Image (cartoon, rainbow, N blue to C red; front, side, top):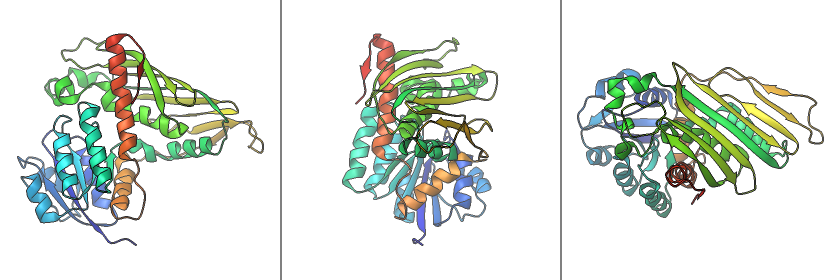
Amino acid sequence: MAEPIRVGVVMDASATHLEQYFDALNVCRGVSQVGLAESTGSVFEKARSFAPRLALKTYHDQRAMLDAVRPHLALVSLAAHRAPVAIGVALEAGCHVLAEKPACVRPEDFEPLVHLADSKRLHLMLALANRLAPAIQKARELVAAGALGRLYGADFHLIADQARLRQPAYRQSWFASKAQAGGGFLLWLGIHWIDLVQLISGDRIRQVCGFARNVGGQPFDVEDAAVLTLLFEKGMLGTMHAGYYLDRGYHNHCKIWGEQGWLQCDLMSDAPLQWYSTQAGAPTGVQIMRYAREANGYARFVQAAVNCAAGSAPPPVTGHEGLQALKVVFALYRAAETGSVQSVG
């Protein structure tokens, strides 16, 4: 067993997934101490209520927390425009970093942090937590084993509720400001599937074209909908639809076709992972893997980041993989603005 590590959390009053992160830390194995830095102190009691097992130490300044706690892992959840500076401070202090997405308002602000982490032999992990979902891991395993043969095409969508867009608090938040958020639906939610389809396929998106618009007409300057057409390095084609369309809940689906079969999954319901393969020796007919959705999808990811910081496991996502997902999103934004196909990278 690796030695327990210390974790430093950097948040502000607008922090996202506070409950999920502290619920995860509360049950996380291998954590000896947690410090929380938040300038106003407004989240201290809430954090304690979500993590009663932790002897949480609180600070009003990130540097003071880093000096006192000397964390091995820093968990940074800040508005996108504020995140790069805090991530840089944590890396300079020698911390591995788990950063809430998107962690920047443009890839040019995240890329130097990836290189800084590399230079210090540290891990910078963007919180793309769905990577560790059982269905995703199984789908990745099937593709890597050749069950689908050469991949031909992928189609996926992620649709969420529009109710949040009508709330005054949302409209006044950093999510509704392009200057503070960098983008809208695609950068906040759609980025998950942009990352996942590359993870499952073992391939990188090379070119992208499509549209990003505020189709609902709400009073903010970020997109609430996007459609993408994708070209992968090994030749596979892909399509994606993303948007705030529903009155509540989510619609989510991914299907990948290959020379020797197909697979499909849905992370937002209890629908099983399904696949079909004509590969020699494969089971006959459609195969099914059932799994239960986790109450806190971040718990597994935070544990993986802790294990990584302790030196007992690889990172659940690399800095370069996170940067690649960000670059795809912003390539789509350029494509929507210019009306032309954009290269990624």
